[in-house]
Length: 357
Image 1: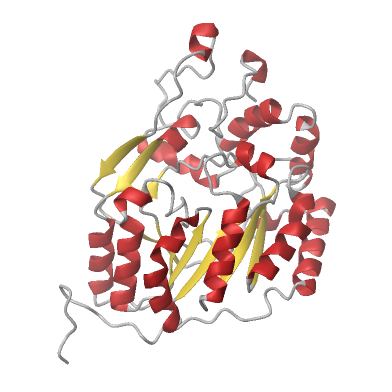
Image 2 (image 1 turned 90 degrees about the vertical axis):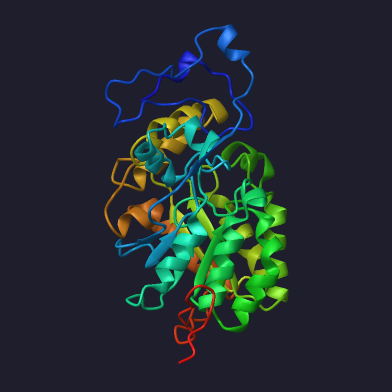
């Protein structure tokens, strides 16, 4: 594990506190930690946006335990900076670090709308749910300017293809006009990720996300507009936010959420070292306890790639979490409605025009 003694300073506004070496760049050298006062007093790194002409957008999800068939991510890397994010590892495929790079060097797929339109135009495509934010948040801050996610939703509406949205950002409300039209055809579900109601914890764990109050407002606003909505209470981190589950599910239900889901944190690949370093800097008084509890949910490890187990963990502590989650969902009438989608409304649009026949 990373030697957190090298620099115990906690940089606010960032999740990861350093840049670990990219596992694919064997000959590269990086300065993982500040080594003196000159390094500590450098200006905070500004977010850099890298425009990319991608070749593909929609990915088939073959993992049987994630609840989605296809995903589309207009951005790679995420400025929200959530310390636990499983998508950090994917940033290494772009040649960057899973640490600070992940949240400060954002790849923008500027041609994503054209790619989605071309994908739907393919005569072999059979309508299925496309999940936005299957990897990184489609409503991170740069979306306010780029509006790529909005254009993707417009295309889903044109073709009448169902779409799922998961976000930690209140910016989703900007696109209420499109989302309402999708909802009229039963083509959309919007989930907000709410990990706690403790703002002090959020600022450390998810430093550049919308406040929990704002996210609950998203749920309430969508619900009042008749838009099917739910929450993900994920990930649950034993010793940090697992005991907040009751309050989160209660608040979500009162705001109008129909569904809720959860995962137990797992720290695969580079995320283990990044999280370990962050944990000892952010919560030095309980770092070892939290770390050991995470291990207790994954047979002594913090990483877990076993289908099924990787989502909810195993062992007595993981069983306790599941029992409590099921109890609270029953108490607050969550997950009582089946999530059916309209797969019959799809229409193929060519060059913005419907076919005559």
